[in-house]
Length: 560
Image (cartoon, rainbow, N blue to C red; front, top):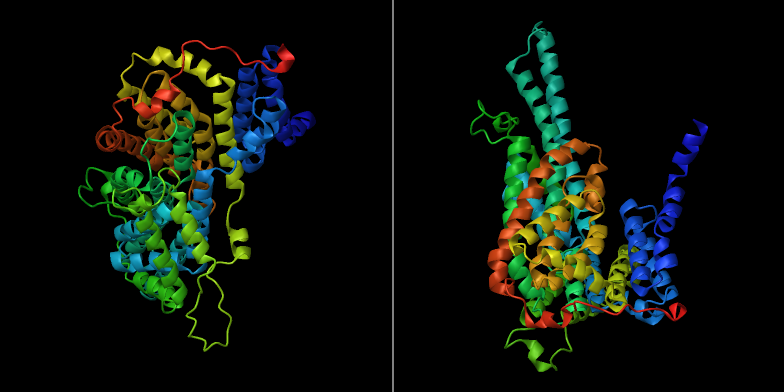
């Protein structure tokens, strides 16, 4: 018993040591660049999957191991940790901190809830719309944490009201000396108690689901999207035509459909639709209260924000300008035509707005009569505290291993092995790939799943002459459909940590949505994707990445 407990307590160190030893024959016996790269990928991937070390810390291993094995120089690896897309993510996160600092996101959230309504179904819809829209532009974690706090405040007030009504009903029944029979009012209160428990689960799950779905709507809505586009850049070069505008044009319709279906499913499952209660138990409406107090709760929270401030309007104005700059840069009449072709990217508008937020005053210069200093909207100290810097270690590790796969020749070997799939219908390949990733990402962190499997899918696409966009975009979005388990994403972990959900609650409702969202995404890529990206044809810009049928292994000097 003592030895077993000792092993259990030291399981983290046991995994930490056993993984490198398990794959040690690769660098010790085979001793080629391909083997060295495969060894690094296996070790880093399994460390990510088991989370034996913090994910950003594991992300440092490629920068350590790839130069030591002679696959990439330290300079080559270092450049992968801060690429153009990394600057895009960094600028976007800084802009999100400005929104958070001014409480603009909370004002938007409460205002939407006030406008949509506060019946249980519309409360769920309001939460989902707000979480989804905010997650398109802000960190999913920040959005989820804020929305859960709003939901928690509403539910606490409603629960307090139910306790007061239950106590008053019990007192009345005692006076009537009829405590052995439940009155109609008591039955309604019992139904309401069950309904409140279901509503609590529905609100937590709807915030999690909509935040994950919203991350697919924009290019920077999720770091997974950025990883996907960078992989296509790394393997096939520029020219694929994916930018902020084309991504939103493709992703937004599917995002809206997935969000609407999620709302219908959660409303039916936890609130009831009342359409055929005698046949389906889920159709029994379990909430009998008018829920009128919720509007007052939301209005009270909104009033605590006070009148809209100059800083909020300034951030909103900056945000709108950034979107306009994104959407008009590549147009034939757009402002990008004023500069040399190929020198600007979607990062440019982000950096313009980010720099402006560090110098733009947070109050009207004339409002204080010159008695106060003009402080900018953003300060570096605030940004340092709020930006998740470890994310760049994580993203950079994925980029480094993708580059090492190309340079070492491992991509050639993998591509040759995957040629056996060339005769299979491409629609089926894409559907199976995205469905498999949607399942896998429920058991390991979705960012880890993206870094592990998306490079393999790019190699698969090139080896069978499939448009890489055709398989990468649905698979990247499938990584975002992490609905079933708390470990799948930080968003799920946040809502689960509140203690109102059980794992089986997440699995029951999440399994259905996993399937539906994967199907919607595959329909979108075969219809809208064909119109926007011409995904059914192998493009010229991917020709440079076509893998040869044979290759010469790249040996290190120690092998000669």
